[in-house]
Length: 466
Image (cartoon, rainbow, N blue to C red):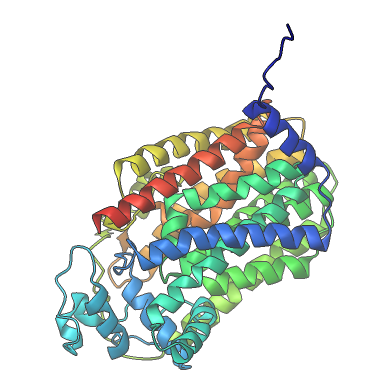
């Protein structure tokens, strides 16, 4: 009698091992990188398109009507000013798609500006124009070419590109940090699982660009600390683009500059000054501060000089004494990069809340793990210091802006995590390095897969409750 044995199927760990072997043969050729970019764009489309066309249709409470209006005006080569109101075209769309917590005029009623929240005032005119031009011009073209499309939806769908290129830039940055191809390809898929990122890339908001900006800062840090070949002109260009997109989006570059300045002081005491560090710090500072100052000077002379921001006192409070006491309360709130977030109501479910709390624990742990575990690898350790410095710097910068930009000095009792969104790519890099250092490299795969599963469940649930 012949004994037959059933063919044993491969275990998941064996398939994973085969995939890692395939990834190990990855070559950083143009063709291979284009394939990776195509993967990210496909994933980004699978996430952004359903949200924009489904549960994320309503206007976001994070100032989306004003951002959409700014993009609309930029597409028509106009810049809003103090006292300007949201354009009728955007108000009509606003009334039709609705907004959480607000009772809006009826769709198609051609309502006046005073019938909308905050009397339809454009209170985000002070932002630099780069993002709005990048979004408004192509959205206007799509709106004109496709009769069934509207400006708001077209502008939101550009989030596919923001997210896709952000993940790709994250991949390029991780390869610069000498991360193996398998982890470098998989880890960027964790980015959209941060709810701040998901919200930013599915709405009209300059925060959408910070995914690319933050990843470029991680890449630049690798050029400086790992390769030691960064040029001050490259650093100035990246920092300047970040600052002209949204001032607070330059926070990773500010943290990087602070770290380089500290290194200069340390090396000066050892008689080993670094001229290149001084050039990079000076170039980045000038690229951020000079355009910011010129822009504020120009915008400050336009519009109604007596205009009052309707949001003053809503999220801010008067400074009662020296600003130091109020600012100290929020100094360490910058570590809440993932758990402190906002999503439209159909997407903000219990699963997302639980997931983000887990993410926040991992983020904080990874930052400190890189600093401690990489004590003998100063290049990688510097990444942890850069992200940690950024978490302390952005609440301080936000408080300084609130203090200086109002007639009565103000402060934020709660500095939300969205101001530090550009640091999220850095935290993902810290998670990857910490997992590799601890010998748990495959934890990165598990987290990325879990994040995509959470997103799939959240988006599906959003459709069911619409």
